[in-house]
Amino acid sequence: MKGFFKTFFASFLALVVFTVIGILILIGFIVSATSSDKPIIGSHAVLVLDLSHTFKEQSQAHPFDILLNKDDAEAPALYDMIRMIHHAKSDTAVKGVYILCGSNDNGFAASEELRQALLDFKTSRKFVIAYGETITQKGYYVGNTGDKIYCHPQGGVDWGGFSSSLLFLKGLLDKLEIQPQIFYAGKFKSATEPLRVTQMTDANRLQTSVWLGDLYNRFLAAAASTRKLDTAKLRSLAVAGTIQTAHDALNNGLVDGLKYDDEVKKELSERLHQKETEKINFVSFGDYSEAVDYRQATGEDRIAVIYADGDIVSGHGDNDQVGSDTYRSLIRKVRLDKTVKALVFRVNSPGGSSLASDVIWREISLTRKEKPVIVSMGDVAASGGYYISCAADSVFANASTITGSIGVFSIVPNFQSFFKNKLGITFDGVKTAPYADMGGGDRPLNETEKRFFQSATDSIYYTFKSRVATGRKKDIGYVDSIAQGRVWTGTRGLTAGLVDRIGTMQDAMNCASRMAGLKEYRVKEYPEKKSFFEQIMSNYKKSIKTNLIKEEIGEKQMRLIKELKQTKEMIGIPQARLPFMVEIN
Image 1 (tube, rainbow, N blue to C red):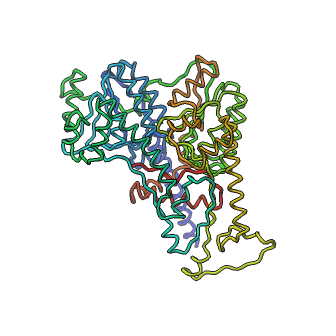
Image 2: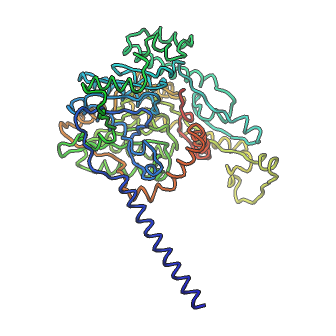
Image 3: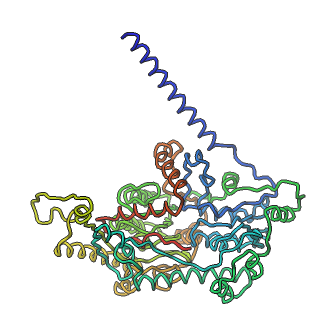
């Protein structure tokens, strides 16, 4: 027995030592993988803009993404990208930009900001070349800013027009005998349609046709402007299905040539006035961000930027959510900080919990009394995303921003028939009051309980409209006429009075500095980035699991899982949310 314990503890000690050494080695590997000397740009640099990377509102590197060999693990944030492009305009080391425009994982409003920055960059007379083997429409939207845009001879350009589709679950729920029991306010509030009908309602089809048409018209106008073509001709190419091959794209003026990769590189060498055998000094924006100082950093006063990116939820929320507790504290911190002279609130959210939205709205309202508050809208600032925006002094949106959707809904599922008829499960119990088990999901709501839920939904909707009326200085009757859950583009939102100006994040920053009377200022961004080890402790399980699942089932299937998860999170909680995910093909 003595020998047994001796062997056991020796083995246990060896295991502990091995584990500690393994952890130290892993940490050392991660640190070495994520830390390096400051990159040297050198001369004749060509910045590479790879549109297949998603430029989020705020960069937050995930250490385990690097271990999983994700190329965009440390892709810069969108506003950083814009500032770097502006900086490169006057940087003598940078001679041009090379756009990889085969695909574009960014939304139309984000792409619009990139487009404007690139068009401004071209005024420096530096070159911009775009290339893609096959070019998607969103890729083309940014790529056509180039002096030249090329595609592979055997590739092509997607020119089929825009489409948006919804997944409807009502037929599945009927087969499973699950009754959603939905309560909503606003005839255009279509977020619950997939659960209550099998196809788009007339109201939803109308609003979708309008905002999708607006985006498509802007896409065609942008292409017509840079390609010196007529929008009617560009539209007719899509209607007739003319563009089927790369040669079709060339013959109709959509691209400047059909080239292989080596031929494009040869042209780049010629523009750099160097031999074809010399290596081109390609520089990623990730390296460029570490090599140059492109941020506003003068003066003692500060402008705070708070990024509200993701679904709005109660509590602290995850990294990709806007948690009401977290953002209440952040906004309050900015409000009480005397060195902060203005707040730019960057909103990129489809909404979520109406209660959480109201918590954040309250802090924005209080801050507006102390210092200027400017909202800058990203790809989406709708429903709850608009709720938290409407109290600002001034609201900026991109022309392609999806906004509005002022409406509310609640979902209370009834699983009684499903459990009884499909699984053979029944429920019974006792209660001390008639409505103690209301909304439990194991029985249908009675008529009185339905009135309770609809009354609560209508009350929240009225409060939402009141917040908008106060913030936008509009009559509540007028707000109701543009509310009803209707979705608007930024351009139409300007006409309706939902936003004040069409402009970029930088335009909002300029407005904030003017309102605060600042000529020099520093930018302080929130939420503050977590330390490397905080990221490891908080993200490692989710990061690895999410990426492994995505790689196994694919991006589209992963989005479907997210939609189903969102549906589950909506149950029993009044929602101010956009109609599921806005997908444009």
